[in-house]
Amino acid sequence: MTRKLTITVDAELIPVAKSYARSRGMSLSSMIEQLLREAVGESTPSFASKWRGKFRPYERDDLRDAALARKYLR
Image (tube, rainbow, N blue to C red; front, side):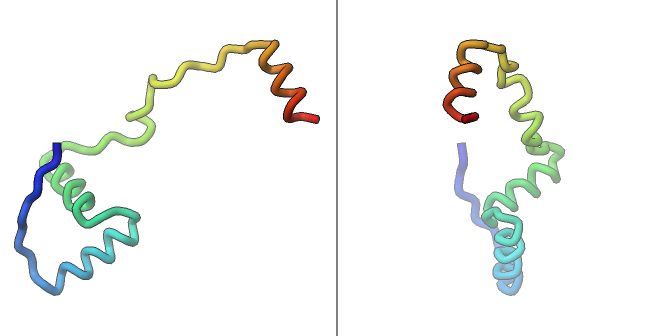
């Protein structure tokens, strides 16, 4: 659950911080949240650790493989 937080910072810092966050493909809010999480020792999980164990290994199905090969490997 997210909640709104009001903070006070130097007026000259805001456009620089927004530009910095934008250059990294994130919003200023998400950048501040990430920095706060790091400061309190809570890190965001990496992509790999977030998805580890979520996918099943490919099980070979000869009929499906043959049908896909006929369709796409002509």
